[in-house]
Image (cartoon, rainbow, N blue to C red; front, side):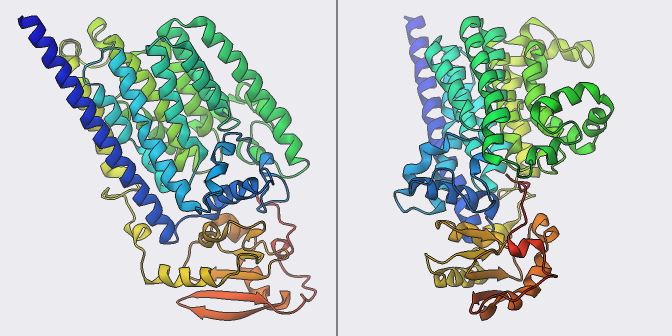
Length: 512
């Protein structure tokens, strides 16, 4: 009778934990959604990426698949993201970019459900700590605070694949892993990481091998055939980021072997060491206890760190999301296997290692919640973190004035606008991010708004000075915001920046 009573109490405790986890996930989804919308309404969202993705989806919803006006190529020449088509119906609702931000918040938060379920299936006590570590992680917080990215679906699909492995439901694992491929051309790396975990942690060799072959073939087709086809002879963004290793993914991989000195110099930067420490701390260092699973974590972490792009090369913005997700996948395996009970820690005094081996069951939940919570408090871009910029969440008078200017722009006008205005005007066939002017009829600028470094380098200031000669008159100015309309044909402006004439081929923004 006592045994049955204890089982009943245990089931009630698990049910209560599941309810608490569900409530927390709902609250976090709402919180992230509010933060994202406030950033957008305060005019701190960006053309690259929220405005760009919104225009791609809007054009696709109107039958112009992957069309955008940010460059003179199809968006498929920048990224191969078939999963975007799943979101096209959102544009049929005439919802604007805010619905994308809300969907992203919900998807990111609900990813904790399959992670929690996978841990519960494996019989892990304190499975809620794993879910909590994910929700407190910097990866999700940084993704929420910077526009919209299709990679936001990666944790949900990866944790669903983990649940499929824990439940021995191979179809679920295979389906989730294959869907990851459609997120982005480099989704093959995450899919291969899942295959490694399936093989070495769950013994699922046949499905792991099948998915690995599909991921390799798909990744090669996307990067070596599809994207070059749509890009044509245009600028190669990959070469900008990895050009010191090679001009294509294949050349770059070979370059890693040939130029180890350059690789080590890139990885020896303080930003890289800090990024690696954050990835490991986000999972309470548990991946270090499962060395057989470290290779996939190394691949998804170190490859972006080899990029010369400042944000990608330090795992800022959304780039931390995938490495931290893989770290939590491995942490879940460590918890399932209770590795601390089999093997004392190799680091530190023997008595400390033995103590951790004995008390690991109590230590790991506190560490999994404590370390991410501390990182969040110190480094999260979302309030109430010490690192949060509260101005980004303040829909103040200047934002209200900016919104008034946006309402003045006709929905059919061809516009060239500063980065923060792009997401508010992106649902039209032709929109350019200033200083790209081309055949624009309206220009909208903000003296106090942020100007991306690439736009400054492209001749932002010179193009602004050339607007009168390009046929534009300033028709309204208020609180530093200026609205220009084209009222006459452009003069010959031989000294104007190339960007003004539309010949400037913009590469990817640090957030793209």
